[in-house]
Image (tube, rainbow over all chains, first blue to last red):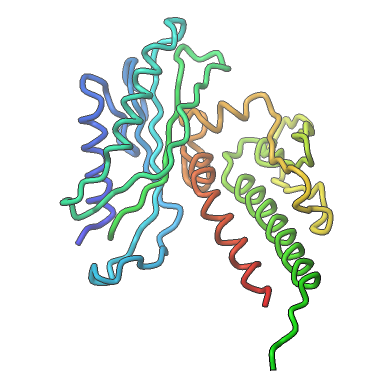
Length: 136
Length: 139
């Protein structure tokens, strides 16, 4: 049996492992951004009333969530650091599913990486996101 | 006795169901974006607009203080049909940044800092739900 905490724990652990040497900012942990580069990991649940798809799994409920990774790197140093983190994020989302893990987080179609460079901030951002399913 | 199949009538019913589903889908998405967007003055949340065949470039006038969040319907339900391309756009210069940079989007009212991608990543599911509901009404 899993819970929202175990789903979050699973995803955040995988994100931390997917970006070695890069600080990960989790929700409701710190308000001040760390030094660049860093990745912001945001998990949300737009729908918690998904139908049961697999009756053989003891009527477990499916949960639909949204995972967004926003990667920050210094401005004016080319797109390479941002795109490298974007690729790491994509690989991470593609490999999120582990068949023997009880939360069974499985990512869907990936949106992005979308660059955001049109403001005056001292950093560049790319955002990559995907919906995911998990078992509760 | 076999029931007579009225092809033309059935096609018309399917057309009407598709048009209604499209209108529902567009209004739902426009409303969701407006409801979820972060609010400072309310200008961004009020600037999600519908466009037919081209993105609509209208924006809310500049505001100096907080105002109401309004969702304007540029088209009536009957004007929305499947034979055109439809756009939901927000033409404020900072809309892209607030949508994709969680530092600016952190006050998103639904979905928090990921308010925009949460809606975008669920569009397919919303469309599936709405179109299925309307097409099921065709007997």
